[in-house]
Each structure stands twice: as C-alpha cells, then as structure tokens.
Image: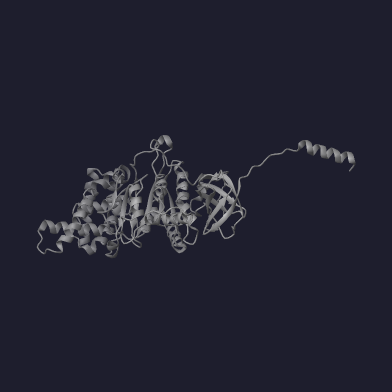
Length: 505
C-alpha cells in the first residue's frame, strides 16, 4: 500500500468520524450487608429505579437520603463489595409478560424456574414488559361487581360468595386449610374462562412442588401461572413477588380477560418488607413494622378491580391470605388487610379439629359485595341458611345446659346439624354450581330432616347422580338461565322424592 493510499484512508476515516457523548450516572458502593447496599454519587436517581452493579447484579433503589441511597439487591449480593461501581439505568423494575407464560413457574423477576427452558415467543409474539409498580385503576374505569367467581366450595358459594373484581381475604391460623381453599378455587376454574395467578411468598420448595403436582393432576396448569419467591431466597424477592404477580394479571386483564390471583401469604410479605426496612434503618412503628406497611398492601390490592367496557372490560379478583397467631384478628397486619378488602373468609382451628372442613366460621366471615354476584337460584336456596347456621351455633351452646327442649328448638337443632354436615367438603373435590343448588334445595326444603346424620354424605352423592339422570330440565335451567321455572322445580321435587324412597329401602 502506497503512502497516498494510507493518507487517503486516514482522511476518509477522519471525515466519517462522529463523536457521541455518552453520559452515565455512576456511583460507588460504600456499604453492603444482608442484601442491602448503600451507595453514594447517584444524586439524580429516583425511588424504585433499577441500578446495575459492576459484576452485573441488579438492584432497586428504595431509600433516598441526603448523601446516599439505599438499594435492595435482587440477586446474589455476596459478590458485591465496597468501592464497586453502581450505575443508574433510568428505568423502573419491569417483568416480561406474554401468553406463553401460562403453565409456567416464574421467579419474582418473571424468569422461568421450572426447568422447561426459556419462555417461547413463537408466531412473532415477543414478550412485552409491564412495570412491577403501577398506579391502581381510577374510579371512572371501574365497574360494580355482578359476575360470580364459582369456587366449587359449597360453604363459600352459598354463604360468602365471591364476585369478579372482588378482594376477599382468607384468614386463619396455620394449618387450617387456607391454601386448600385457594387451590380448590383454581381447580374449579376449568372451563370458566378464567386465568389464575398463584403467588407463593416465602413458602418451602416442597410445598410449591406439591401444589404444582396437584394443579397438573387437575389439568389446571393450562390456565395458571405460578410466581414463586422461596423461603431460601432474599427478602427483596419476597417483597417484589406479589407486585410481579399482579403485573402479570394486569397483562391478561388488558386483553379483556378475567383473572383470579392468590397471594399466599401477605403475612410473610409484610415480614420480608419489615426486614428490608429495618436493614435500611427506617424507623420502626407498631410490632416493628415501618409506618408505610398499610400502603404496602393497599397499593397492591387496589390493583384488583373490574373494568368497565369502555376500558376493555376484564377483571382481577384477589384472594389474599393472612396467617393469624392463635386466632388474633386484631393484630396489626390482619386489621390492615381486613380494612382494605371487601370481606373475609375466617378459618377457625376449633372447627378444623372437630372435623368441620373447610373450617369456615360462618358468623365471622362476610362478603361485602359478593351477594350481588350470586346467581338467582343460589340466592333463593341460600337466603336464610347463614342466619339459620348462626342461630344453630347459639342454640347448640345453650342446649348443652338444658335438657328439656321444645319440639321447635329440637327440629331447629337437627336442621342445623344437617346443614353443618352438608357444608362439609373434602379437599380437591369442587362441586359444580347446579349440583350445589340441588343439595341446598333438598336441605332448606326439609328433605334431609329424617335422614340420619351419618348417611347425609352418601345421600348427597347419590342424589346428585340421580338428579343428573332424572332432572335434566332443572339442571339445564340453572346452567343457562341461573334460575328454575315451576316445571323445573316440579321435576326436581319428584326426583328427590323418588331417590329418597329408593335410598330408605
């Protein structure tokens, strides 16, 4: 190559050279401990902004102080040391969402952890990103609750009904069947056009595996996403997991679909947040929780709603779970969440050990909006059932002290005992709504009064099968019109009486 060629090449390169200034906001780690990093030099960083460390680890800014910022580290913090560079990214934490996440188990950052490889993006559909933190939909965009979420649990669908867009708290001591209710509700959504999101917070991996197996056996994983932050993972991931779950739910709601989301459980979520807050040196309040622990859950649960048609329709129904200590619903976190939600399903230890399962205390449980969403047929048969059960509990306690009872009291006690027996239900055995109506109809109309209590379950199972064959008009009316006609009722009465004659032989 001649000198002229070299000169010519150099001239061309100089002419084509463009200089772009790249500005990066860089700070340094001054302290790191227990998943928390204190950094200086990031003067323009915003709250909830993502930052990256020199080793590739990511963190979220949570504390803004005069000279430093407090960052929660989302991955392994053991590699981060004093003096490391930390860069602001200018974006808030996001989670990838797409239709292909159904049937998958994700971590709190939305990445798959089920060993089935990366989430597919075929057909040209690339994963979108939704922000983890988002302002809840406003009043104008919402619609009142008037569509039911059928859980398949008789005691809930009849007495404490849940509507699409509602937030219904499941509360009780440990080992009283809270998760069991949530799983039954997921299993019953098969064919109901409902997406389910299950958020596991601080649970053991063995419990998560058991849950996955159960959902796979019930063909429920086809419409379910599991978001997991395990007990062995940093508190930061337990803190983020429910927000990741609701962002995934919002993606499906934006498509006009109905979503059921379960937070299992928010007690562990509050504990994780308390741990982070104390490490960040935030001032502790009641029970050592920080002052904004109410806002922690209110901004999460307010994102559950039912949208009106002008804003795409769709809904998110939330079932948060809270664990109490010795039935104390007046503790800090339970009272907070009770005040945010639209009712609660209270599970009692005493009932559980008596063999009444699901162990729902009907007197303390309430649904503030669900009755509007109940189908007319269920409203009709369950109208007085709650009051009857509450009266039965009082009479039962009273009758222990008196031996001489009048006939009316005796019959009320006997009816109450049968009501309790009817509402018992084994785990993972949801009952279709039309079959629930049949069972409760036979109870409230007195057809079970002369059936001995130990035979109620056999009678119930046999009756449902008999009615399916001999009262097809009635069942069709419940499915299609949500109420029965006189003709349907006559058919049902005849079927119950015929079956009863056959059963008593």
